[in-house]
Image (cartoon, rainbow, N blue to C red; front, side, top):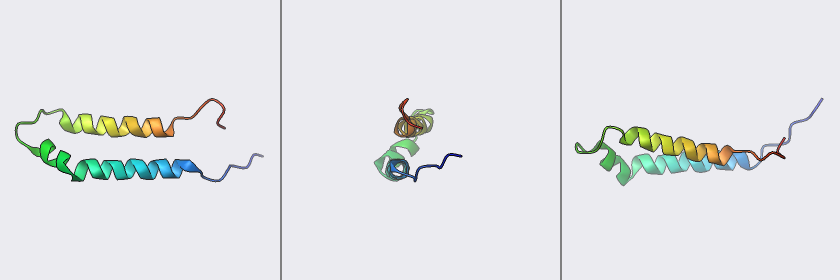
Length: 65
């Protein structure tokens, strides 16, 4: 029976991603996103960047359990 290691820096990475998403969606980017002359794909592009950044933060190396 294996014992799981205590949560480490993964919690910090998730918190950083959450704060980045809050900053993106509450700042000047929000006004740019909601302007009438912005392309239709801007919200999807913003979410794609947030998801990719989260995937990079949670990526594991081959020697991780």
